[in-house]
Amino acid sequence: MDSEHNNKKMKIIADAEFGGERPLYATHNARLERVTIHFGESSIKECSNIEAEDCRFEGKYVFWETNNFTIKNCYFAESARSSLWYSRNVKMQNCTVDAPKLFRRMDGINVENTKFPNGEQYLWDCKNINLKNVEIANCDYAFMHCENVLIDKYKQDGNYSFQYAKNVEIHNAVINSKDSFWEAENVIVYDSEINGEYLGWYGKKLKFVRCHLTGEQLLCYVDGLILEDCTFGSDANLILEYSIANGNIKGDVHSIKNPTSGRIIVEGKLGELIWDENQKAPADAIVVVNGKEEKGLKN
Image (tube, rainbow, N blue to C red):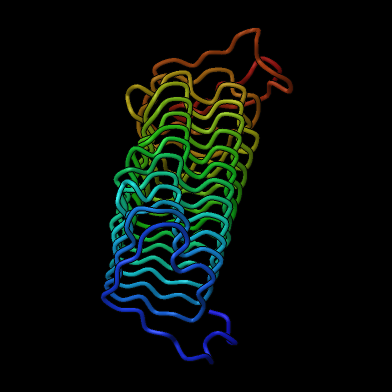
């Protein structure tokens, strides 16, 4: 937190209830303990250096334009929608959040040991995000246009995630998401499972290490794909179409179609390798199966 704020004495607000519009507007250097925010709007707006612990939030637009704040052991009801927008430097720990549409246009988000069962449209246009031991469900369009994202021990259910995201690093995750990482750039995923169709289309500089990937037509139109010791599900057909890809695949693959360039080693069985007249230039990709090189039409 800001050093100037740290030097000021914190005002304690404990065992209190508030409602209506802007009850704590422009509050600075305050600690909220066992506070309930009832229905209303913008309860903690334009504030700074706030600590909230064991609190309950029911009204919407709670933390707007608020900087340097901590939220611990708190509950956000479903009615507390859009409660963290346009703010900077938040640390959230051990919370349960039923509210949709959180985290919009924010900078500096640290979340740990927290569940978001109703994660509709989470994390849009945010940067400098760090999540650890987090679960998000029902989260269509999460992480859209986000930058500088670090994630560890993560579970997600929801489609169209990480679209247009940049500089993303993920460890130990299970992501169930159709159309994830579309047009994403500079992404690296370690030791994770990603399930869903059309993974990574039109992405740039995507890297997957020791991951298990399932779904149809994965990793197509990718410019700069690296696969290291990854496995694919039995439904992973027509993968790598029009992609520039390098690396190795452990285990079997249903089918590969028209990679553009690079060298891919398949260590198991390849059901079908499709080269046709629709290959894109330079059309010099190499697929190695059982030690035998299969070359694109322009080789």
